[in-house]
Length: 357
Image (spheres, rainbow, N blue to C red):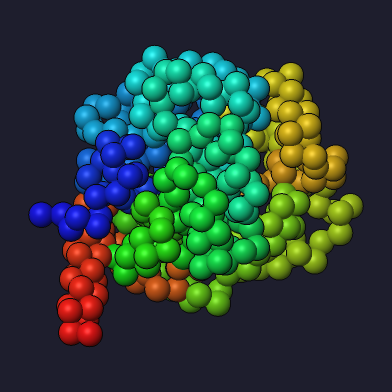
């Protein structure tokens, strides 16, 4: 039986058994990982930013074939075809739409009208206030310990601030790997945890084994937050490539970025016209420089080189700092069972200590 404290507002909102979310990691969170997470009682989320609309349809179909449990799709609010993707989610009855950036008011209203839970990721209290005012149903508050693009405020400081500011479920992200972390997040007032790296390092993840072994061999001190990849702070494993990018000048970095942009277009089937529209949307919505826009083309293909092609020597390895305390590759079902059991045991232990006092 699930401990009462583990039956949170997030469970009710998502329609899941446990307050555990697998985040939408580009090139990693495909149908297999998403379905495994949802089938095990958590919330799996498909990463659609690196998929074409047709590929997203296939992924949604595959998840539905594997499980009848609720799942989500992660979207980029600035994609040129985001409206078409939202229409797809509505048609398919997807439970949750998550966003790495804040969606517009109109997008939130459209999703809410269709009964789809809207959940952006934020890294600052003011961002949580803004999206809550716009009507989102939940937020993921990701602290600096998180992998990929991340902010500068540690989870232990960000999470209580956000929980005290908004009256919607808050999922905690950044440094969580086990049941003790889940209980800590609940103690801060969160409605659950969202994890990326811990789910990446499972048997159900399609990331090549050679790459998983690199992750397992790293410590909490083997990551770095760099702007050299795409102009925005991004936590990755420190490698020779990252050191080279850090030391490169803008003149040597830009040609590589342009080549990556054209390669990304081929992989996703994006036309040059749509690529230009997407770039302009990114610049308008994120207030980035033209230099950052060109650099941003590096990121998707460098991640794909590692996470799909199994070539870590020419790619980048996004990761949270929790990497240093992960030492095995369980199935997703084993992982979620372990987290829930450890959380239950931790809660029972705390209750026992309270009684003795």
